[in-house]
View 1 (tube, rainbow, N blue to C red):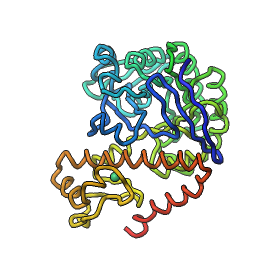
View 2: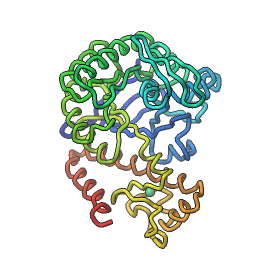
View 3: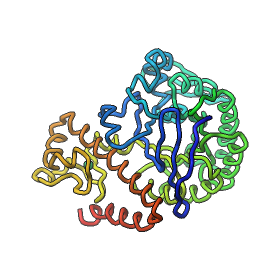
View 4: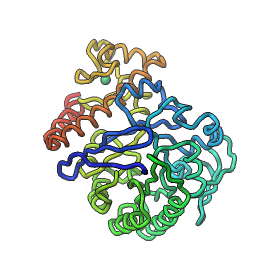
Length: 373
Ligand SMILES: [Zn+2]
């Protein structure tokens, strides 16, 4: 039996459920911390687990360049190499080829590109991307697609989406089914409802264990992203997990969960953790700000993470001012813990049909710093 998802409760369009995988169960809605190059930056694997995270993401593009898919395989696969026995989702590499690599050339069969590290030439096709993700031992493999650049004309978005749908079929053919493993297709179509609908229908025709919505959070803004979700989510199967790729801020996650999305990944909590930006129940703030130097209180009084329960904000400010490595470690722990806390609260609110009340109180909290900070 491949990976499966079952719904336990719903509240409006939002759903709470369980993803069953070869590497354990995951309660949804779920946020995946990003473990780009075989590590969630600045976090020990035990610390990642202690935040409540159960599913993490790895990047095919980074791992195929360093240390290389064959080497990851010889090191026992991503789970063993990272000491992360839980499920891991890997992206297909396509998005980062377009955003990070130097010279690149797209053709009907794939993309040839130069590594951003040493300029060496590489090629990714639907077949090779799926094969690399197999070697990495990804629990959830993503179909190889082209993330349509934004903005795009409707004609450009259609051509790009149709290419991705041909690649989705090739990805399906290349994927080797194993018990508890799965392949997700990716809906493209930019901001054009008819293209999104046609992409969703094409993917359903091929058949996947889950359905991702790609090509968002690329500069279109939250309102337009939510419009696309309003059009796209109802076109996806009710029995499969839905994954919004590369999103987002706490407010983005909340709005997307309310629209029926189950899975998310984003570098925000980890990247912000390394750059002194704290995501809290009272909004976002920068710990380098001098006003925190004498602050004896916790970073977030409502948070139960070790950073908030053991240290004063003044100490965190000091660590970042001195560029001590512990600063990014403690703040990344808090940020991921806070993201996991939000998801837990949303799952509980969906199960008790109190999501709209919970959403209002979360939003009121996030506005506090912006309004009174
Ligand atoms: Zn905390």
